[in-house]
Amino acid sequence: MDNQLSMDEKFLKKLVDILETNLENEQFGVGQLATAMGLSRSQLHRKLNAINGKSTSRFIREFRLEKAMEMLKNNVATASEIAYKVGFSSPSYFNTSFNQYYGYPPGEVKFRNPLNDEDSEEIQTSNDNTATLTSKSRLFNKRTYVIATLAILLIASFSYYNYTNSETTIITENEEPVALSENSIAVLPFKNMSGSPENEAFCDGMTTAIISRLSKIKGINKVISLTSMMNYKDNKKSMQEIAKELKVRYILESGFQKSGNDIKINLQLIDGKSDKLFWSQEYKGTYDSIFKVQALVAEMVAKKLDANITEEEQTDIQQAMTKNMEAYDNYLQGVYVSSNYSAKNYIASRKYFERAIALDSSFAEAYVRLGYTYSMLGTWFGNLSKMKADSLAAPFFKKALQLDPNNLELLYRRAEKELFNWNFKVADSMLNEYTRHMGENFLSDFLYLMLGRYDEVIESINNQIKEDPNALYNKIETVYAYYFKGDIETSLHLMNKGLMLNPNFEFTYDHFGNIYIDMKNYEKAKDVLETGLQISDKRHASMLIHLAIAYHYLGNEKKSLEYLNEVIDRANKGEPEIIVFVAHYYARLGKNDEAFKWLDKAYKKHEVDLIWLKADPNLLMLKNDPRYKVLCNKIGFPDC
Image (cartoon, rainbow, N blue to C red; front, side, top):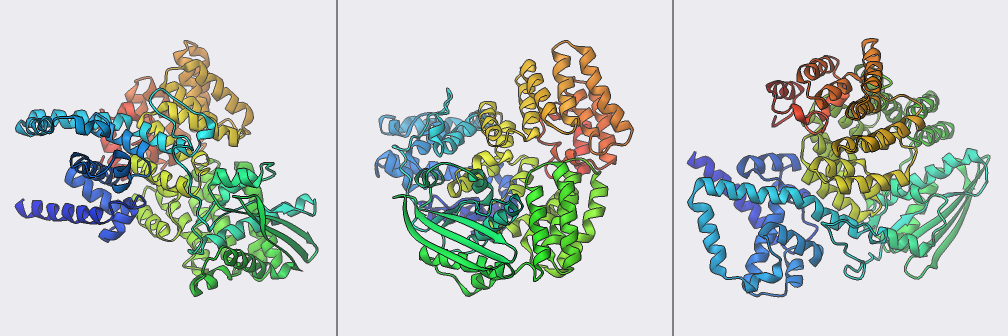
């Protein structure tokens, strides 16, 4: 035991030494600490949690706050200056975090009697029961309010939305001036100069290709993601407005025209600070040289941004997906069709990827996309059972792996497959490798949500927002993180913003309904769920079940049973991936025996939504039942 304790102490000391060295570096977070320790993020989290019960992000935050207290007591500098000295991104965030941790703001430290703090520590450590109670009290306080603190950080990036609530304070742009990196860029969606709707897929393909290539050049500090930039398609805002929103210096505005094999590209690089044209170029050529053109555009833009391109990066950005341009055309059409997120569009996209493969049997990306299409129909849309979707996707992923073992898109899709097969450790390992190359990503956040590691999700989202402010409203995991942590107000706010971005995304209404059920606002739950059903081309079982719950608590048992029985009837007829939702109904009504009967059925069918067993508020009321832990262990969750 002593040896083990000594090993733990050495481990903690090494962590502290690394953090001490990087104290002023606000960018030094969980990922950087894990790398410095020679561990993955998950390995570090598990080891630290086993030693002291803390997540890595909490350990880092508390270390910074304790160093700040030392500096404040020694009157090293002002509270605002100390905020930066201990690695906080702003004095406002530091003040809020400090207040939550110590119970009073940093400005009061000099007015307090140091003996009081020492006496308090003695009292806490003199009695095991008291120490436990005090520790729990502090933990409860921090767990309750940590999300509100993080909301301040996130919302600071969006002060123009004027979102307020009683427990947060908005950090305005005057308080937190934005420093624009000189070589940061946003690529606006290419404009279709031909006017032909058929060329929209080529324009989106060009946008994707240029963003992808620029993102591979490490000499460019910041490239806004494709997801965020597609929100600016046909946008009428000025270049200055867009640059300010995205916190970038330059905007690339482009037009693309295709007529037969002839192409024409107009490029304009605009200084977002002055709204003046910085550089322009017109390119005329042939479509069969499109990959060379994409590489050339990326290289020219990088040069204008004074970004150095390494030999490895040069090779990477000059790679061609295929030599068959007709295959590439079909690939782009498939991507374009599936970009409008629905089962119908994913089904429609398959024929394009199949044609691309028929035209070029060595087209790795087309195999990845076709495999992914089948996976989506099983894991996300429920049109296929998970097992059926896996069997259909497997040969395409296998072929892509043979053609291009280092394909990062394939690595990501394989990780997704392992995650939904409940192989959490394998998925985590693959995602750590993917993150090492590509940075923070949706699927890692998704995995951590399932495992209950909400602090890591929010830290990851914070990092992504620093690079791409619009990332906040594009990420459903942001909503989940706040929801699962208990901050319903922020979750609802973000959901509203997501709805504004895409009012036709039917699952947003389902999430809304769930949240309103938790708030016991069953009338609102009913209204938003019925709206979701109206705009959807499918009667989603989850919406029907949540409507059944809402109607039950509204006293309309006839309507409640009508929705419930519709789902049960469909499940009994063999419809895939809906059994677990019946368990939601019985769990919400406190009928545990019925809930576990349906959960056992879902387990035998390997239903996808069982991945949410540890996090889903619809099932959390079952946690005190011994059968819950048994099922949790059978699925393979760590720390049941």
